[in-house]
Image (cartoon, rainbow, N blue to C red; front, side, top):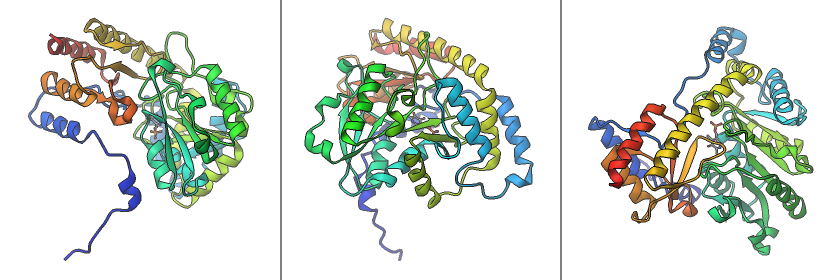
Length: 391
Ligand SMILES: *Cc1c(COP(=O)(O)O)cnc(C)c1O
């Protein structure tokens, strides 16, 4: 007889996975051969640019790349990241101690709390949010204080509302602009206020910039590290996943305050053993030569955004045109009781998948997220089908 296996208290504490039912219904629909349009997943539908794939292929054939990579990442990659940062944000980063390559930014974000939290310390976590902020905090034994992201505050957290007793025991705050799932962007005023808040209360800022390169209408997201005082309190996470259609490759980086970067490196040196060097070399090609690709990618998402937003508005959805990210965050029409009810109805009656807002946290209730990760023809088809639902 098998031994008795009981999951840990930490796993028990993770927020419930609310997509179970939708996932099951989606699998079932696919099995039945229904023509599903999946606007649910935040994973680019297009291929990685060929010049990056070619670079990987070439580097994979070189046997000197087959051994363990250095934990700290190859210096060619750290230098390329530093050059890219200077060009994109006009921020200087020392490649030797202010940059750390990651096995995808999710990995670094989820591990970072282990570097700084002790049992009972608070993490200030936006809600709705990208799930690893909560998971990483729980694995590190921290407590979560939710910062509601509300429409009336343009989905920015209200730092003045955090209770003094929580503030005293807070070690980290997560921010993510351009934001998943709300598609909101940060203002300069908010970033300045955030840095003052962090310095005054001795709180580390974890800035997740996964969507920095997906922007429209002349808006260009800024790095939090552009702002005065940021190097004293900020670690920023970047990803190649969304910018160059490289979600499966697993490569990103952390950068900013050198002490924070080195603490994360210390955690990771006990967990992983670096990124396959051929991937690091391909990442250098992406960062050094990927600008024109990124331009065409933005034009593609912009067209999709315009078609879907226009379509949803004509059907009575209350949706803003996002300035960045590949998501539309829409209020659910009043006659649906909850975001899960709407998502179920969309799937059952129109074979369109979208993500219920409540899956990203309790303050996501009342919203639904559409991802622009299918071709524009399919988006038009989806809008047509939604028309039938709302009739
Ligand atoms: C997609 C995403 C990431 C990260 O992706 P990696 O593939 O792990 O680099 C990080 N943050 C947010 C908010 C995302 O949506």
